[in-house]
Length: 155
Image 1 (spheres, rainbow, N blue to C red):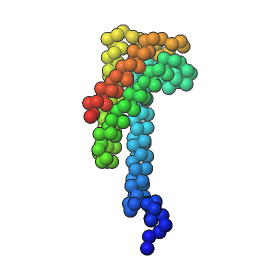
Image 2 (image 1 turned 45 degrees about the horizontal axis):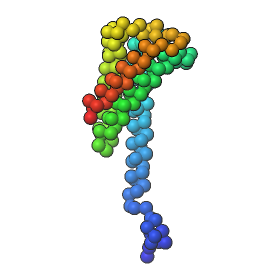
Image 3 (image 1 turned 30 degrees about the vertical axis):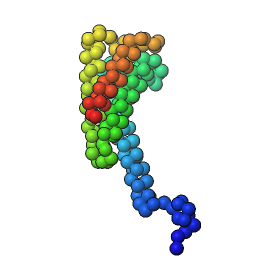
Image 4 (image 1 turned 135 degrees about the vertical axis):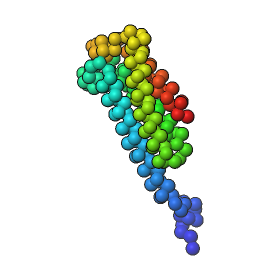
């Protein structure tokens, strides 16, 4: 005999709870990997950028905020594409997100240093400035562009 809910198509399919549990677990694990990569990316930028980036952001230096924001967005591109290309395979997806994210951090740091050398933008002065400097957009654009390049390279 069927229950009233089953007669009206309201019963949950067998295995639904397991499906939800696996999905929630994947979300949490990917969020942790993403957060880890964002932190690694931030600290890599902080360590390789003249001046203490974290302190400058807390002080509200507009150019430091612009560059940091762009760096975090670029890391998100990399993590999102790595997750998307995992094809539902959790372990492989987590591992590829981690590996590609770390490679992305290294590439970004090197490329921004190269950009600084090529453009002769004195990143230290730009980031430390108390007033908005348009040159910060060049550094920010480099972060976002490289994040997109690495993200597409993953796919």
